Length: 325
Image (cartoon, rainbow, N blue to C red; front, side, top):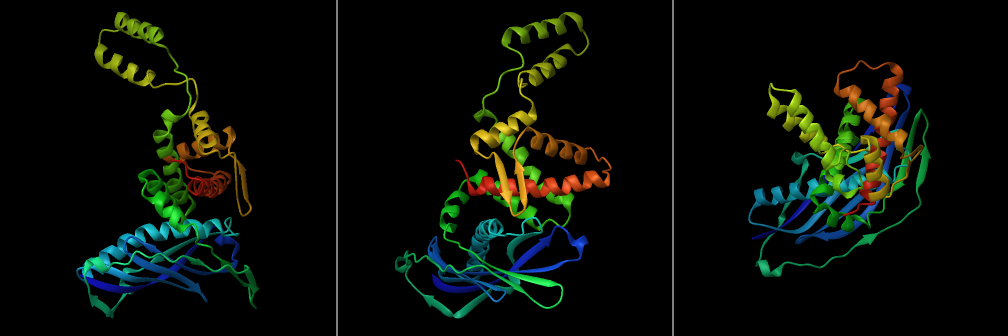
């Protein structure tokens, strides 16, 4: 068994949502955070537009296993860190931010390799957050650079949520949405979360059956009396559909999940501000159906899709930051 020290240069990826305005904006982050995960210590440092993850005392049998453990850790860390970063982004209406990396740039310091006994593993945790005021720097030319101080003190709490498979799915979809390059892909990735939550939480909201048992029996009896061809298949199909049908519409059930389970009645991210109500649910479902059926969108509909996609990502961000088991 060996101890490794690993350095991972990270990149801040930002996607502009309004490139047609030809406005150049550069984001820089400033952070310093130290903690532990599993059996190793790690630190995050962001300064002067450079972002480094350093892992100390990572135990592995060889370099290949070390790399696999680093990749697994990054698959958890980067979406969680990006969630915190985007939630602190005052330009959420303009730019989506996320941290990413290239495996080819990962550096293992061979001089830090020491043969050890597994019992020597250190479990000490040292968390540190340095808080500074946010800065805004206006440079000559048309480019504006903003420097935002990021507080990662909640990162350990989010790591606990990451063990939840539902949270993990929602977070991974959110992470993909941040890097989507066009409004349609961004909307699709975000709406995947909505469809998943509709299915997962459907039994956690109050609904009323469209038909009670006696009414269902009458419908089945009517079919059996009046139809001879493919009777069993038709009855099975009708019962399967109507037994799950409710008096509440799809948008009403979605709003019940968002309002009653996650207690989200409105969202505000940068200049994005929206009530989470029936009209909102109708709008995003209508756009989803138009895209699903390949409808050619007008310019107004494309703009609605763009805006709704940004609102959806903001909504998912709120869900993740206020996660309910």
